[in-house]
Image 1 (cartoon, rainbow, N blue to C red):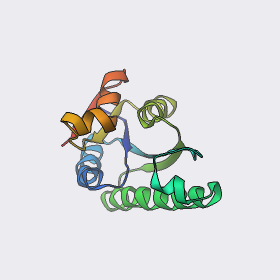
Image 2 (image 1 turned 60 degrees about the horizontal axis):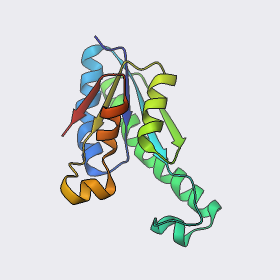
Image 3 (image 1 turned 120 degrees about the vertical axis):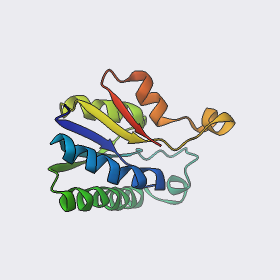
Image 4 (image 1 turned 90 degrees about the vertical axis):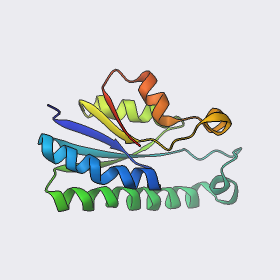
Amino acid sequence: MFQHILFPTDGEAPSRAALAQCVAFAKDCGARLTAVHVVAPFHVLSTSAEMLRDTPETYAAHSQARARACLEQVAEAARAQGVVYETLVMEHDDPHEAIIEAAHSRHCDLIAMASHGRRGMRGMLMGSETQKVLTHSKLPVLVYR
């Protein structure tokens, strides 16, 4: 079936909820798992509160700490189920592009990710990274709701 699954995580509740299901699926398939967390690069002009109050160095340190925390959740779940895993932090302005790029560069055959359920005006304004991955990926995408 699937041999290498990419699991993008932002550490938020939908990703945490999808994590157990994804790890169980990987175990059932005998697949290895790569977890990726995408960090936005620092921009002087930004609407992100973290970037507005931080220096580039402070922002980088906070971003890396958050990435480590998100990926440690995946590592703990994978170790508990005996699933072979690796973690990856990527810096990119467009998370969906980074996710697809990671899947290709790591030779994954499935992207499994959570949906945050953003719809309507909020979905239009904020966008849905899951929807963008579904639209642009040539690989199969499994969406956990």
